[in-house]
Image (cartoon, rainbow, N blue to C red; front, side):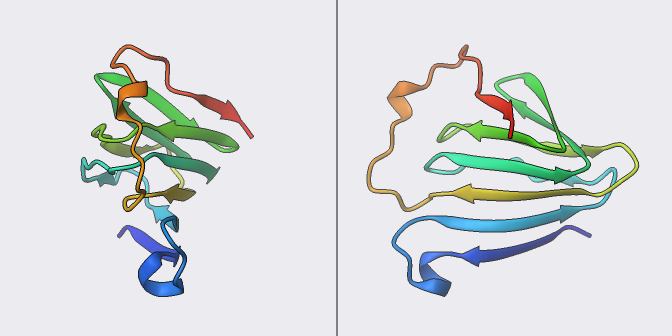
Length: 113
């Protein structure tokens, strides 16, 4: 069972645009492929998940930060034997969307935090 709790959002806390969610997903689970209108940043607390963006696989593991550009489908699957636990920050209601800055062949920013 996938657990997702939104800590901050315009509907729940009255902030303007950003949402912040805690995610806890069991081994082998697959997330639904979806898009956000704005950027999404994901920080992995523990475990491993394989994200796919534009046909390329990206392994997110403990301590990894990952930026997902706007309007890019990103299915994910938990790999390994432990839950994947992460925090995601995203902005679906942002007034300025910078899709033109992203190209399909760009290297997506990923780093150890």
